[in-house]
Image (cartoon, rainbow, N blue to C red; front, top):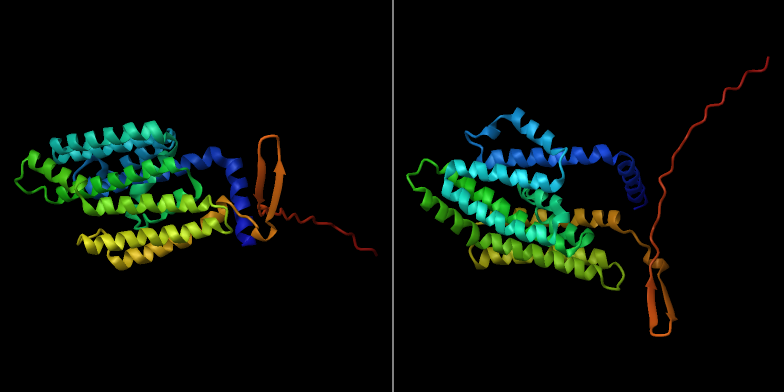
Length: 311
C-alpha cells in the first residue's frame, strides 16, 4: 500500500507541474478513440475512413474545452447517421437535444464522463464507471453516465442499419426501427438501472460513518450491478451485447480496479480513529476524526565526492 501511495504522490506532482501538456494529450486520445469508434460502427464509405483526417480532427480537439469536444463528436455521429437515412438523423438529433438540455443544466462539469462512457463500452468494461462515479465524483455525474450509455446504443443500432443498408426499407421505416431499438430496448434500460443504483449505493455507503465505508460501498455496488444485469438478462430474455461470463469477469475486474483507485481518492488510517466531543451555545457535537495517510515521494540525490589519493 505504501508503494501505491508513493506512486499517487508522484502522479500528483507530475500532473501539477505538467498539466498544461497532459490535458491536451488526454483530450487528443479521447477524441481520436471516439472518432475511430464512430468510424468502426458507422464509417463504411464515410469521411472518417481517412485515418489522417481522424488524427487531424483529434489534434484540433486537443486544443478545445471538453464540452466543445462533446458537441463536435455528437455532430460527427449525426452526420454519419444522416448518410444512412435523414429520418434516422432527425430522430438522433431530437434525442441529443433532449439529453443535452439536461446535461448542460445539471452536470456540465463532467464532460469527460460523457466522452468516456461509449469508450468503456467498446473496451467491454462499462461496469467500472458507476463505481468510479460513486467513489470520486458527485451524483450529478450520473446524468452524463446515463447519456453516454444511450449514445453507445445509438451508435450500436445505427451501425446495424449500416450493415443492413442494402435493404429496400424506406427512411421512415429505418427511423422507426432505430427509435424502437434505442428507446424501447430492455437491455439498455437494465444497464442504466444497474449503473444508476450502483453509483448511488457506492456514494451512499461511502458517506456512512463506518470504518472502510468506501471499500464496502465498492464491493456492494459492484455486486449489485452484476446481479441486476444478470437477472434482467434471464427474466426478460435479453440477448446482451456481452455474454454472461464476460459480464461476470469484467464486473469483478471493475470492482478490483475501483478498489485500487479509491486509494488515489482517499487513504485513511482507521487504526488512528479518534472520537471528539465539544459544544457551543446551540449544539453538542460528536465528531469522528480519521487521520489521512500521507506519504511523501522521496527525492533521492546522489552526491559524488572526488577524493584525491594521497601519495
